[in-house]
Image (cartoon, rainbow, N blue to C red; front, side, top):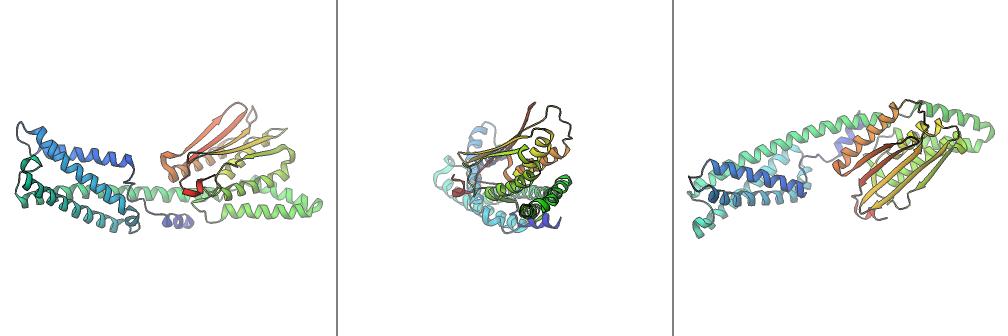
Length: 355
């Protein structure tokens, strides 16, 4: 639990959404137009609704666009200030920007008359703008704050569950590995020593305080260690074909993803087949999207329970959702004689994503 808390505390708080994203901008503009309609409804005179709405929409939408641009610019810096300070800073900056825009609008109205926007006294216009914007901005910031705290609690819970799952190595794997090593100590002491070192490396990768993400190179190395240990026990029954040369090895992936999938392929597939089989691991990089697929043969009469398999898949799906949101997919395909898992996720590390 302590490790999970430490990991979560090191992560930037997801307090402010990505205001530079087109989807976020669209939502803000729709909300701003709704506010403009509501303000027009409470103030227009009969027969002037469309005229007043057009003026109000122009004013409110400009405020929304400029405010979004401001938040897009300061978001990385504001997130490092903590929730409460970020709330106060963003609120004050937005209100200052709105008052400056309101004053500019008044001056333009004073010059060009009703063609621009508002009929009102100077002080009343600024006061009304400040009051309405304060309510809207405060409600928006409060919503973001509550959403941030909710997401933070979800991340903490998920990280604690992930830490527990990452620390688990199936007991049968440990027992089988130790038995294999014990038998090798007499027949091939050098190979037994290498197996002990591999098992220690694998245990270290599983039990160390987990990093949120690791490089593909490190992840594939951990999976290869597991393969070597199982190869000692299963011999020629286990074959693994790696076709991952096109993947950018410095790109990041949620830690301990491929090794558990390889372990599932052995435990639920190869071990149940008297003649064994081949696990195929493929990977490609297409326009910044990484695509990794693990395929293994399965027995037609699956006699082994799939609870552990489902737990590992649930773990991986949850981590990918937390790391990438809707931009990643974890696809599972179970045919009569083949089982496959496909991971599709963005490579967002700049130059590291070049093959």
